[in-house]
Image 1: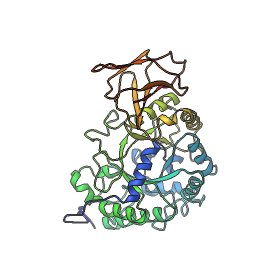
Image 2: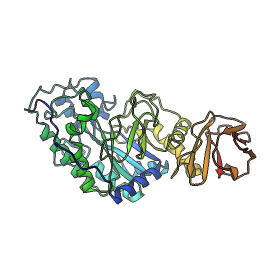
Image 3: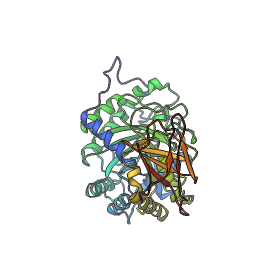
Image 4: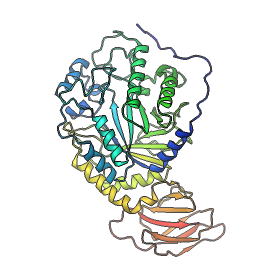
Length: 432
């Protein structure tokens, strides 16, 4: 029985040097700017979100019986991927295994998976991987570090304490870490090229100091395993703190980089790694039958714009139903975002944060010597400080010239025509 954690490694470790494949993958990731998150598992059958096991203190043995009735008869991977592609998103991140411990893929590491434990018997991750390849969509895997159902997950973290597992039990932390490594190996050898592994749950042991976390979770060994199996696979960890050695992207939960409205990013400084913000369409990650509080398509488009203006990707979440369908509200919003991206994608894809920074009227994105001003609050005149000489200003996408003035040591002014009613984002294209 393991009663306390000990680092798996000791002594100084070599610093992480990204491979050429990894650096190329980081660049491609930063070009994408928009992805879709999918939270799906047997928790969808209860319809109270992906944290229902924790929130309602469900016994881990009884909860596992849900698998025996899981039969998503209307699941169609190609329909999902085509809807995602039509939205303008470039990648999908799906929960391969969430905190409840159920694996949504074929695994030899545990019989508690969608192929062996359900009457459905199909590897939905495999089908999704094939559909993504056909449509040119990158596939990323969410993977939970913590587990509310395994008895070798011991000592317990701060969650999952009411699921009925015996204290101590057959707790063997090294055995648990070996299980994690075995599943990561399967995910990276069974489904072709994977864009990223998206970890979550490290915060479950947040009673321990931050400097202890890499040793507790054996991050160095896990990260090295991933980079060895697929050098171009990126690693992100939703731990709400500064990135650890070996991580390739930095994640912000329900907040734009540098902000903390949701309360997850207090003190989380923005690194120089590629950035990603994950956000829900409604209030829930996993399917919640009570949650019809969907954000409007206009709000989500503006959120995508604000995210890109921070130099970050938006990972926008959908919680599929237990029958395998995507909610109509989600599909409507995907279609609306896609229609907007068909016209304005140039101002989002491959851009970085604009030189102007956030303004009262909106934000900006930039690509080389082109600046896109996204006017999110109606105004007749855009006023902003700009350190470069403006060569031209035009309305986007029609290209009509706009009057502007720019004097030395004074703010620049661009004069706008009235925006048509219902305009989500009035865009100005500046060359400098």
